[in-house]
Amino acid sequence: RLDPTTNIPRPAKPVGIEFLEPERNSTFRHFLGTDSLGRDLLARIVWGGRVSLAVGLVGTGISVFIGIILGSLAGYFGKGVDIAISRVIEIVQTFPAFFLILIVVAFVGPSILNIMVIIGLVGWTGVARLVRGEFIRLRGQEFVIASEALGVGVGRTIFRHILPNALGPVLVAATFGVASGILTESALSFLGLGIQLPVPSWGSLLIESRSAEHWWIQIFPGFLIFLTVMLYNLFGEGVRDALDPRLKVTH
Image 1 (tube, rainbow, N blue to C red):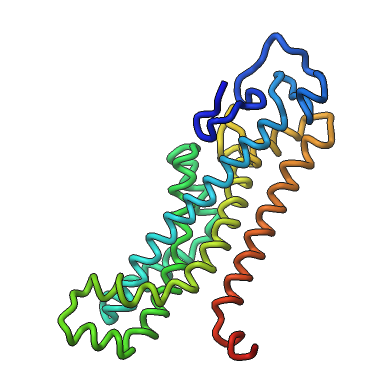
Image 2 (spheres, rainbow, N blue to C red):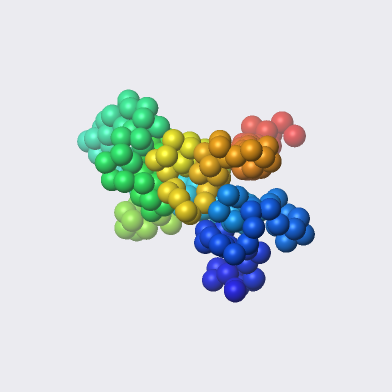
């Protein structure tokens, strides 16, 4: 049977239960073995990685989109618009992010879509502050003044001329945001408020492994979470160093 996303044969069923197969099978067919329901562990880890990465990427995409829109408006118009958006940012930041996510998930219910949206709605404040600061810095530049003098519309000035020059810090924040989203999803799933069974994610595999008798069932999902978060953090630091003008001057 072909996977509908990758169009390649699935190694085994990551969700369905194979009643006719024994729990312990050939290591060549089930490299990491099977769980108590006969589901291939390697297939569930790979499938769970897709879910965890999708939650991190989509959740970060939502937060970046909201942060860019609100930060652009606050930085460009200033005055009352800036004050109103800044107060909203401060109100959202007064609540611990993970505690706020727990409350919202408890009310709306855990699902992949809900978790993506909630992570995006909670994590936009940092991006908005970065974009606002960049817009305030670029607002008085000559190319912006020339654009306004030529009668270019506000939307075109913001999104065509100023925003491309303000995306450097946003890219750095986005890479760190993906790592944070993966950790948030894993923590929610571990607490039973994240991705619900039988759909696997790295966090839900960790909570399943608590009652397992084999050590590798616990090690591999946790190690992949650690490795993925570390790589995204290192990538974010690399992007930040590449875009930092002070480092370019030093070298």
